[in-house]
Length: 341
Image 1 (cartoon, rainbow, N blue to C red):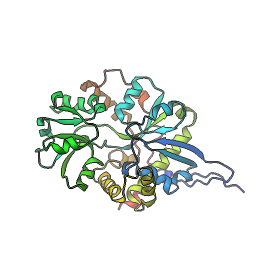
Image 2 (cartoon, rainbow, N blue to C red):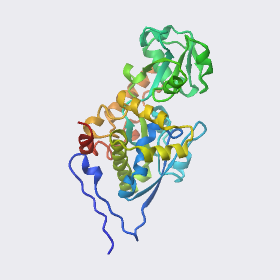
Image 3 (cartoon, rainbow, N blue to C red):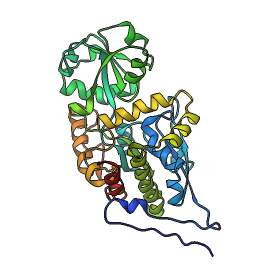
């Protein structure tokens, strides 16, 4: 006798730990999910949900397509080649909205954007002293996002700007240089080589962007919302298990298979940093579950981008930028309570 699919929904948190049994005759739903960069610790919760069978228990067969410096998965999503993706950043998603592309945000698996400014240790008194630096290396794509915000709000000037081409040699050669970095990447890699740095997380200084956002086609939201809901719920469970469950071996193995540059030591350091700064489990996620997203917060961020000159008023329609129907349900909070004493 075939098992029926059973889903137990609790009012708080363990709703996402619903028991789902799929009969042998019933194929799991295939879902292709594209990330924004090469596989790393910051994607770990998704890999965890593959490795420990969480996605399968939700009736999903998830294929994770890692990103990279040359990847652009959005055309693949617009042509139905992939189902969900992490946009390169919130600004990129807002640009898509401005261009009237038929996609929408359905969740955010980082409450804080890891984007930071990095200096050689002890070179500056603090964040408010960085506008005195002669050179600030910033990626070209960021020149028209957080760099505009820095010049509008924190005293930086375009004379300081120099393009960051993802090679750290120029920064290493200039002890007074400032460089764009991910808090979970470059500073940790340099520390392995004995280079000490000071890291200033922009989120700690007013940058309200989310990261690890989940973007979906509007057509999927309208015609197959159950697919998105299963992915969001199972991913939340994956993240709680990854951050707090204690057994990341399976996730690590899958990450290293996709990106051989990763090691267990690097991944351990990334996880420690994610926990230290509350990158994923902070803010609204503490009460609404990992993956939480807020239209009101996005509206505030949009206002700040208009003020900084990144967008003009009316360029971005926040009402069509995001839907809150799949997140904010408290999925996994009971599991968190079990893990975090």
